[in-house]
Length: 117
Image (cartoon, rainbow, N blue to C red; front, top):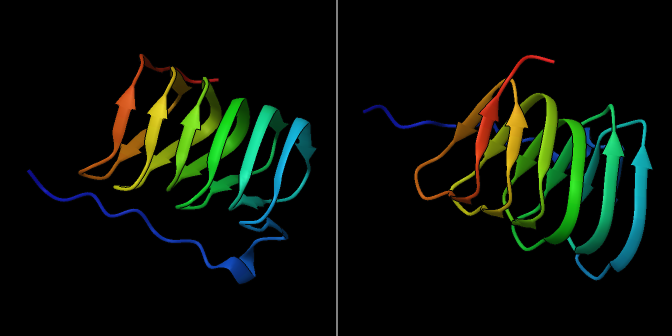
């Protein structure tokens, strides 16, 4: 079986980055690509792209266009475009997306449903 390689996004291409020392909760909405490198709990909802850094810990229901994960998410993920799980990602929750890409080593404990939106 061939190895899956997901393209890394450059931080310079992201409009907003929440750094590793950020720890907050609530409802997060945004209109341009966002990267979370710290901790967040609550709800994330956007029609834009969400990038989760390697050391990030997210406890939230996630609803976004593209969800690219290198860190940890506890909660269900719904994506309009694609979910990308890097080898360092750990997901505990269900995924609903038209496309899911997983690198070897990614951990998914949940149900994956692929459907077009």
